[in-house]
Length: 477
Image (cartoon, rainbow, N blue to C red; front, side):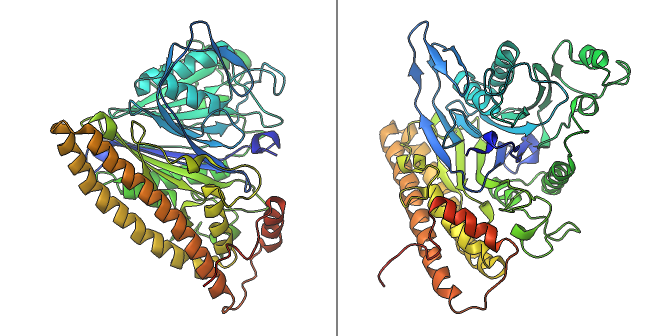
């Protein structure tokens, strides 16, 4: 059963660094998408499309009028979902969302109307040429159709929207909204409201509505986060810890942030703090930025993205996109491009049952194996992926320089082919290496003392639900 239909709110964490906060003066966007343990999150690519005048598009719950042109997009989505958890478009706009609970009531019956947060992420990417334009797309659609809900999971949404010049934090409650512009520095977004009494744009009736509802005493007393969040029914303790941790890590690296910095932040388990894991990350009792499968709190990181947005690069290289499947601490980021460079179609394979054809399930199988003895296995896997990512980052710098020179010489097709070969090679290598690691850990496991993980029976049930065999891939050696 999809997460949003089983009464649980997905946790997510988003980060951005703008202008002088990054080493190269670019904008870097990142997100961890937390979903249920057995819900594959697939990567998909849709080309730019022209649509018939008067046509419509079926989103998750409702059908709305289609625009004349939808832009080329790369997105990550739960296998059952029309919209995206996060993504980037051909103009170098990146968007992600995070669920949040508000006092503002839903107007429509469950599953009957409105646009869910993932609908709005995809629609913003398909229809916006800049961060601001994409934000206005989301606002206009939200004000027109209202928020949708699935099953018992009735939540509102925060959004982080970025391009090569700026970023916007958009926090919503029903059809009401408030937005903060970031042109320099760092910002984190999570499953709580963080905009208080200062903002750059807002719904014209935002303050008056809160006063009328009795959520604050007066206009002078108004604070969006205090007034609109439903603290009585939904705790923010875990979200607040994750948001403060992300903010602290961003600020400690300000001025020297790179793609690699973001990858490591998304892998964080609060190591070295008084809130660090008591035993292993998966047995932890407070969700960390990299969140693992725990029976007492079912969200876990299912997919991650890091995007460097570079306005001074040729259009093909405008977005340097790095994607990761399963928990990033024991998985790997590999590169993709939105425009012209062919997308590896196998990354779109997967459903509710384990399949050898699905890259997401193959990375999940490796993660499940690591979870059985995290303290021993995770450092081995992490060291392998660290070396792999270092190789990818070194090679891609040289490759992009070559591609720029080729395009200057009028050899665009050759530049695209070079990038395409690299993307495909890294995808294939990472999948093969994940399988080899799983085989190695299975053999090593037979030589080690057994570790009794608190989640052992829970992990067994998860594997059984989807037909994931404990013995892993079979090869003759």
